[in-house]
Length: 397
Image (cartoon, rainbow, N blue to C red):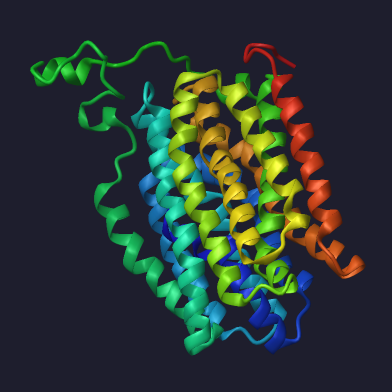
């Protein structure tokens, strides 16, 4: 999940300015690479979810990491927009679909009672990559250029992620004679047999056919997609927006990295909250924080303003990373979680695809991102209302 950020929108954000300047491509044209990946994910995510349930998270992650490293490396040799769309589109598809589905599903299957906190730790690692990879890339671009930096990022994906995935991923605890979690009344002095049998049994397991007939599933899927539209539409253009506001490239890169830091730290907080409070209210809170943070973006002035508002936006990003995967698992159980996530993930893919192009289009038409940010704030507020209207999980269409 750390290495997944090789194709993250914040990473592309630090490449946007130098690539546009050297290659003569518009910001909208470059941002279109994210949209290509999103379009692939519309069709590829259901297959990814099916593969997670059938062949296991381990092999989905191994294949994903191998291809992600190769496609990112190849971005350093692109000379035309077609090759950029090919390589970045593949990398972005892996970022949106197979890697996060496989990683979050395997964590959801290992934990029930402390699932939110476990997911928070997972996305703390994801957010660490969100903070470090763009910042290190920005420094590398200033030192050796953007082409060499893409190559370094691709090699880094293999070095960091491939071996741990091969050695340490197990699909479910039952595969090695264990069960998820442990009852709170089982102590350290209990026998191994007692601890292995101690499992939280209050969870239900839905089939895909039953799950897709419930209204809350589609409300959660659509609102999650809307918030990822806002996230990608903001992140891809963030550095360029700050530079337009007369903030230096170094401070702009630091601001987006700080956004990744706060996303990571808040991931743990959001995970703790969803373990203790009703999931709909927690998800609604995420949408409201996003609405407030993106609503103040047009008023950014100076480096400190960029740091402050990016940090606030990062808190909302931490929420959309952690809360939806936990929410799906809480509502629909572990048995068919991979394929359920795969069916709902195209909404995220559409959002990830549309966001950067919408922001870029608004900029190209008006010379400013203000209308884009204000529209995003309204969409997040509407999402908060819809989440509260989701009702009980057993309400069927």
